[in-house]
Image 1 (cartoon, rainbow over the protein chains, first blue to last red):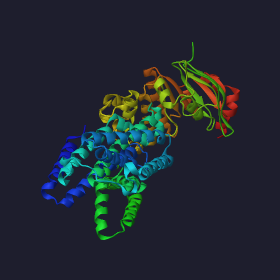
Image 2 (cartoon, rainbow over the protein chains, first blue to last red; image 1 turned 120 degrees about the horizontal axis):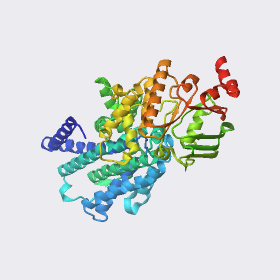
Image 3 (tube, one colour; image 1 turned 120 degrees about the vertical axis):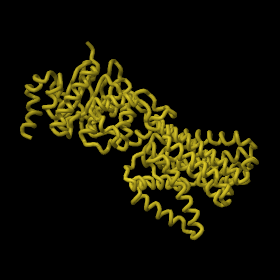
Image 4 (spheres, each protein chain N blue to C red; image 1 turned 90 degrees about the horizontal axis):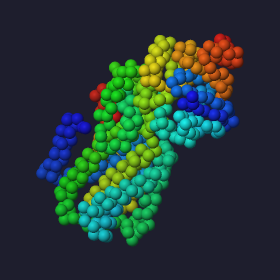
Length: 309
Length: 250
């Protein structure tokens, strides 16, 4: 169970965010919506990276599958949101289960390369299957339910969905399952010798990560009223990976912080210069050289605590 | 009486180097048995073959009548064989407490529970095991920051958490000071006795072995060259030549 303090703090954050539309501009509301979606996306990836110790270079695949599937079911097939969204999430999870089945046979760099290869396949499908996905024109004009078609309605919808998603991930990451995943990350050989089937556990973690990545993707597609092949491209996988690393992989909330900081930095940087990739490179350099456990790790060191999960 | 662990004609070769040569070996339930031999004699390989970490080229290993060859480590653990490692093999970023707690969770098959908070499970069982190996005061420390000797004790607690009937300890006192060695041996002997465990352990330090083992087997160049009661092994001319002799000169 979360501590009393953690519960109160989370409740206050959600409440403050809920009050944002009273004070904030449209710009602030949209920006917060985006940050919320990326926070869920980054957290889902960290189930694999921080908790299981498996680095995926292809997490955008599940984000894109969730996004495209929800968009297509809503628009092409006219499904109601209450069906389209869960279906999209389940589909992302199923694809993650199939891909994960093969990926968890490998470890380390070979694992990472295989996740990248599968993600490129997903990108290829989005690109070539023009009649369904819209190809490189993107899938646009998503039909939105009236209740959430206004930007404030959509903000609340995102806030509730993301909060529920984060709560679910919190429970999973702190469960007996989650603790065993951390043991696998720390020493998978030892985990085998206490009776843990590490391959099956990693497979399950892969599926959980893909499922919640799909939920983030579905929210993203509806927010932008469209999905584009860039959302499935490897640069998107790299972007979310950097969010996770920036926030810190050894803490549950690290990726949320990383997603917020990186996305806000990108937005503000783009207002002044077109050289965001250069700035991103510098950020990555700083993480690798001086912040191996991210901003959360830095905060812990400043407060004189060890960098433990 | 049939053996608890029965090994027959075991071979293992690494790129032409024979690490285990036609080893046959019987271990009776309740026995405390030491495998000794100089470094490089193939002791760890022998353990890895028993516990499923390595697959033998030839030969059979059976535990209580069940064939172990081709079973992965996690299945072998569940049959009742737990082990420690010569090189420290713990979860360095977890606390001492969590290191043992995870082993209990795995033993109870709760690793698939996605809802129950992991840190609330088996608190008492974990505490008892830590007290047993003398690590209760360090429960909340980060495991990777413990002293070497204490990490070895933690290894033992993790192995015991799997509730084994057969305990395999690979050089349980390697790298310890003489005082730590004495304490560890005494503690292992007490635990094994109290829990009625069968113990198979490797060791290169002869003095440790004679203090605890009821039977000793000597491994040399991957072969068992002598096996029997400590005194008989000590006086075996072949053993003297290859093992004690080397020690005396070393």
